[in-house]
Amino acid sequence: MKLNNLIETNEKLKDTEITGITCDSRQVKPGYAFVCIVGAKSDGHDFAAKAVESGAAVIVVERDLGLNNQIIVPDTHAAYADMCAKWFGNPADSLKLLGVTGTNGKTSVTYMLKKVLEKAGYKVGLIGTIQNMIGDEVIAAHNTTPNAYELNSLFALMKAEGCTYVIMEVSSHALDQSRVYKLNFEAAMFTNLTQDHLDYHITMENYLAAKKKLFRMCKTAVINSDDSYSEKLIDGLDCKIVTYSTGDGSTYSAKGINYRPASVEYEFVSDSEIAHIKVNTGGSFTVYNSMCAAACAVEIGIPLNVVSEALAELHGVKGRAEAVPTDRDFTVIIDYAHTPDGLKNILSTFRECKKNRLIAVFGCGGDRDKTKRPIMGSIAERFADYVIVTSDNPRTENPRAIIDDILEGMKGSSTPYKVIENRIEAIKFAVSIAQKDDIIVLAGKGHETYQILNTGTIHLDEREVVAEALKERK
Image 1 (cartoon, rainbow, N blue to C red):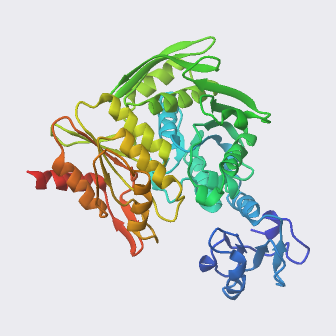
Image 2 (cartoon, helix red, strand yellow; image 1 turned 90 degrees about the vertical axis):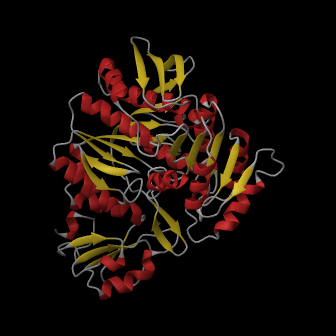
Image 3 (cartoon, rainbow, N blue to C red; image 1 turned 180 degrees about the horizontal axis):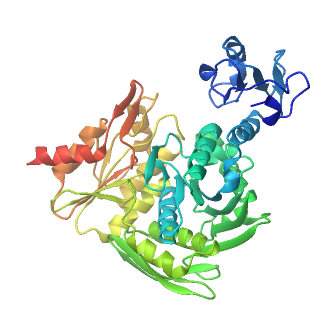
C-alpha cells in the first residue's frame, strides 16, 4: 500500500510502498512504517534508529529526530490508530459498534448484550477482557481493549464473518491512548466510576475525563444515573442521552427488585413499556448490569420481550460471581473483584444470603494504585466473617509489602484474619476450614488462569486449586 493512502505526507515519501505497520521496533521488517508511541514505561522515539536499521521505510514521530524518512504528527497514538484502520480498509465503518465503559461491570454487560442480540437473530462480535469472540468462535484477548492494529484486524475478521454488531469493552487506557480514535459507536454505555487505575490517571477527574471521550463518539449514551459521577459525565454531551436507575426520574427503571442467592428479578419499566426481567446471577450489581444491557438493546430497536427472554437464558459469566462445583455443604465463589467497589459489591451480595460464615480470600495487584489497598482491607474486614489476605498479581513488587498495605486498613478490626502469601495455599486453607453453609469468596482473579510474579507468569486456575483442595480435604 502506498504511504499516501495511510497518512498525509510530502512529495518525496508519498509513493513509498509500505509492507506493514507497527509500533513495536522488534517487529519491524523491510518496508514497514514504524510509529513512535510514547508509553508509560518507554518511548518509541528511543527505538527509531533501531527501526531504521531493520529496514523501516518511514518513521512517524511527534518530534524531529533528524531522519530523512520521518513524518512529524501532533499525536502518534491517533496517527497509529488512523493508519491501522486504513491498512485494513476501515472495517469498522461496515459494523455497528456498541461500547461499554466503567470501572466495574463491563464484561458482564457485553455478554448479556451479546446474548440479547443473538436472540434477536444477529451475528455478533465481542471484544473484551476475558476473550474476543466472533459468534461462538473464541479468540484470545491480551488487553481489555486491544491496540489499534489488533483491534482493526479483529474488525476485519468480524466483517468478513458477517457480523452486524460488535460489542466492545472500552477501557480508560484505550480512550486516553486513542486506540479507538475516529470510531463511531451506535451506542455507548456507562456502568459506574469508582477508584481504580489512579497509578495511571493520578486523579478521579482525569479518570472521568478519559471515560467521557467515548460519549463524544456515539449516537446514544446509556448512563447509570445512580452513579455519583453521572451528572458530570452527561454535562456537555451533545448525543442522545438515556438513563437507567433503581429509582425514579430515569428513562428506564427497575421496580420490585427481588434478590435471591443465585438470581435477581425485577420489572423493567419505561414510559411506554414494562417487562419482567430475571437474571441467573445474584447481587445488586446484576440488576445494574442487566439494566444497562436492556436499555441499550431497546434503544437500538430490539423488542423488549426478546431482551427479557435472552437474559433469562443466560447462565453467568466466567469469573463473575461464578459458583465452583464442590459437591459439599459449603459454597465457593470466584469473582474478578479487584477494586474497592467491586469487593464491596461481591461481599455484600453474599453477606445478605449467607447462613453461616462469609470467608473472603483476596489480595491486591502490584505496580498498581497503592491507595486502594487499605481501603480494600477495611471493606473485607467489615463485610466478611473471616479474612485471608494473600497475593493477587504482585508483578514486580514484594508481595509482603502489598499485604502490609492491605493490613493498614484492618488495624483495630475485630474480624479474625490470617495472612498466607502464597495464593494457592491461601485457597487450600480456606477450603480446609470451611464449615456447613459457609460461603468462600475468592476475589481478584476471576477469569484469569495465571498469576504474574516478579519471576514471571505462572499457571494458576483457581477452579483447579479448589478441586485439588477438595481432594486433600477428604
